[in-house]
Amino acid sequence: MAILLYVHLEKTEPFLLEVEELPNVTDTLLIGKHPRRLDNKSVSYMRDDVNLVILPFSQISFLEVLPTGQEEDIFKPFRE
Image (cartoon, rainbow, N blue to C red; front, side, top):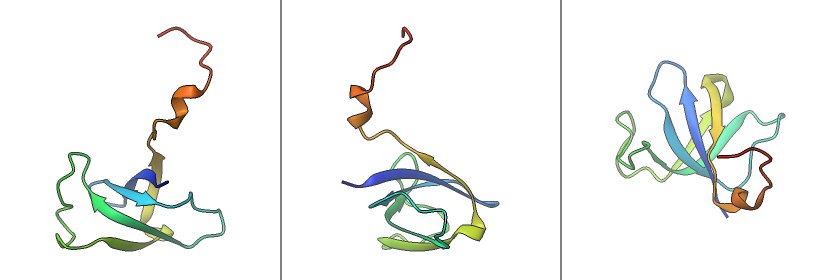
């Protein structure tokens, strides 16, 4: 099952990326599929037909791991 990341690169707009597993601390590259904006449109600085991207971690500011739906089973001790 793919993990959905929200990738924040330096000085560019963030985008969504699907990865098979979370990166390790020893990784130097992030490899992911189907890059797209949050509204599912293509990323302005990538070609429309790109399906796989390889990014160096030196260019990534931070990553956000988006929920996949499996987290709903986790006990939440606070009220919503």
